[in-house]
Image 1 (cartoon, helix red, strand yellow):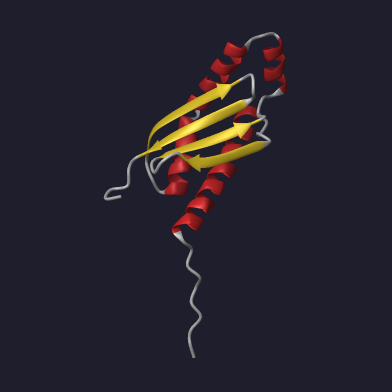
Image 2: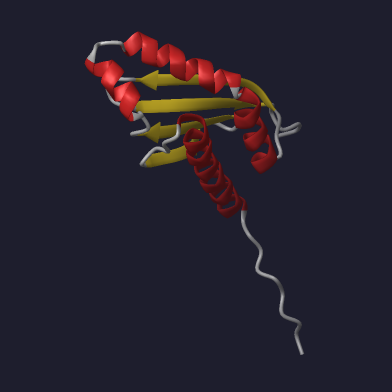
Amino acid sequence: MDEMQEPRIGHADRQGLELQEITNAMVRLYKELFGRGPTKARTNYAGPDTLIATVENSLTAAERKMLELDEHQRVREIRIFFQHANEVEFTGTVEEITGRKVWAFVSGMDTNRDVSSEVFYLEPVPGA
């Protein structure tokens, strides 16, 4: 009798699971940081060593009110401040999920479209 073998998960499947896990983690972090998670989020590789997490519709009621008063720059500054104040949580989460070191982290936001991005630059895999 042949023993049943465990199904193997391919590289693409494993990468897809990692990307979904990172997306879920970004939603959780946004909810913890700002009190409101985004309604739309995704994470993709932009080349072999760069991850981009994109979140949409994450502005709080207070931030939306500030934007009505044309305080776009103030909202961006507050968001960037909080994101970088919690950089260890963002980068640590990505490192834990991917098993790779994050050597640079960049946050950005388009307040007109309520779209934010978290960009993680990963150290290259030796020999890859």
